[in-house]
Amino acid sequence: MSLRPGIAFLADCPALLAMELIASKWSMVTLFALTDGPLRHGELVELSGGISRKVLTQTLRRLQASGLVERHAYAEAPPRVEYALTELGRTLEEPIRMLTAWARENGEAVVAFREAAGPTGADGADRTGPVGTPPGGPGR
Image 1 (cartoon, rainbow, N blue to C red):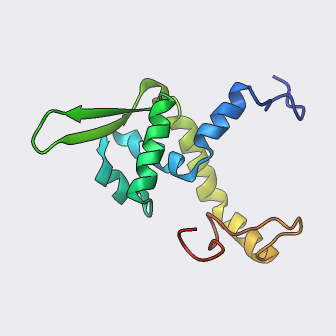
Image 2: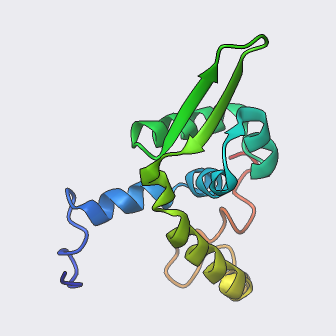
């Protein structure tokens, strides 16, 4: 595979699709949370540290539609629903672990760089977001 610009990430290429699937912060958090086994919706909310129930539901639906997560509804009273990684979803465990290890090793350096660059970097890009406080406060 060529790494020349425009070749590796064409609009219809599998690499871009994969990046799209895991680019969402909440997709990564949800997939990582499910690596230890099936969880209920409320357990995922607790483990994720800040996701709303609505956003989690949207994230789970998107991951289900991509074949990465499956939903198991049990015929019980009260109803019980669990989410688990599919076989395809399990193939992301190692890449997610690698990204997590990279973040642990380099996260402080990224934060320090962003703080040194200020709210906007040399290129004018907004440096707030997942690491900083978003414009307008949390939840935006």
